[in-house]
Amino acid sequence: MPAGFEVADFSTIPRVPCPCGTARRAFNDVADFPGTVHVTEIAEDAQVHYHKRLTETYYFLECGPDAQMELNGERLPVKPGMSIMIRPGTRHRAVGTMKVLILVLPKFDPADEWFD
Image 1 (spheres, rainbow, N blue to C red):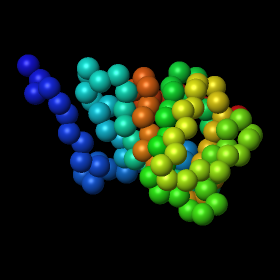
Image 2: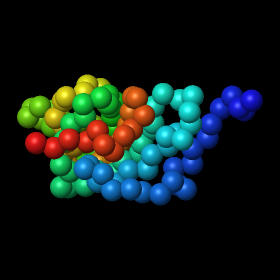
Image 3: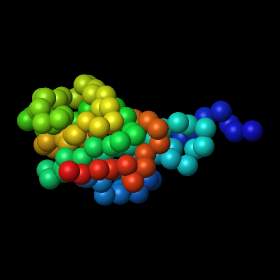
Image 4: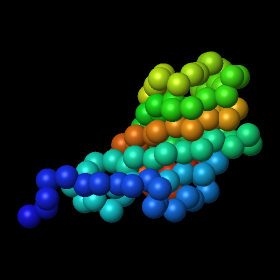
């Protein structure tokens, strides 16, 4: 029987490239957890992309002074402590430097990253 909990130490999880910059992804291998949790460092050249199945919820940990989220072509200013839930089909990218915690439901699948 499982211990009743799982622990992720993000300092030990390798960074992987993503359309936003680099991400550390936790709990993908936990069968009874329906999602994944990412800590993502946003690059200046983050790409506009969307997902057909995944819902992403961004929680902004650190942001540069002009940080924004681009959502379906509209830019919204963001700051630490804010959160944005992004539904499937929403074209999005982060603009500026920031570090975000992202909850992805269902589990992250790199095959569900789409570009126009």
